[in-house]
Length: 219
Ligand SMILES: [Zn+2]
Image (cartoon, rainbow, N blue to C red):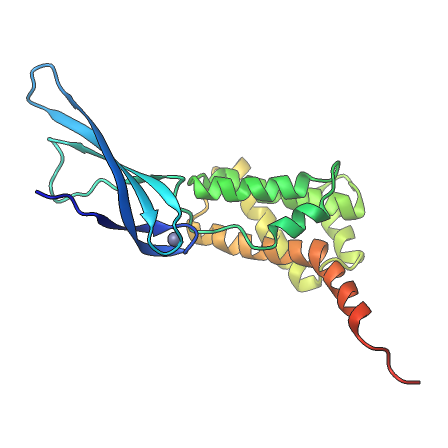
C-alpha cells in the first residue's frame, strides 16, 4: 500500500492542525523471543505546508494493541497549546543581566507547559511573581507582605491583587498539597501573569514613548 505523502498534524507556529508534507520515513521493529508478539516505532519527518516548520512524528505499535484504541503519536518538539507571546524579546530587554530571573522563569514556564509538566509550570509562575514583587518592592519577608507592599506601591489594583492571590494559591497547592493544575487552570493563571508582566515591565516604556510623540497642548 502506498504511503500518504501528506499528513494532518499540529503546527506550533500556525497554532492548529495543518497539512504537512512527509519528507522522510523510517522505522524500527522488535519481536518477543517466541516471536508471537511484535511491535515497532514509525518515524516521519513532517514539514508544515503553511509555514515550512519541520517536526518529527513518532508512533509506536504492538501486535497486542486493541485495534479500537489509538496510541497517540508523539512530536518533537512537542505540540504546545500555549505559544510564547510576541513580546518575549521586549521582556528580555526589560530584564537586564543580574535582573533576568523573571524572564528566565517565564521562559521555563512555557517549556514546562509545552512538555506537559503542569506542576513545574504552576511552581514557576509562583516563583516568577515572587521575583517580580521582590524586584519592585524588595523582600518583605513573606508572600502576603510582599503582595501588600506591591498593592500599596500601586503596581496592582485591589481587583488584580485578588487575582494574583489565586494565581499564587495554585502554585502553593501544586508545591505543598499535590494539586495537579488542568490545562484550563494553567491557561487562566498564565493569562493573568502575562497581563501583569506586560503592565509591570513593558507598558511603562511604551506609555513614555507615546507621551513623547504626542504634540503638546497650545497654551
Ligand atoms: Zn505551520
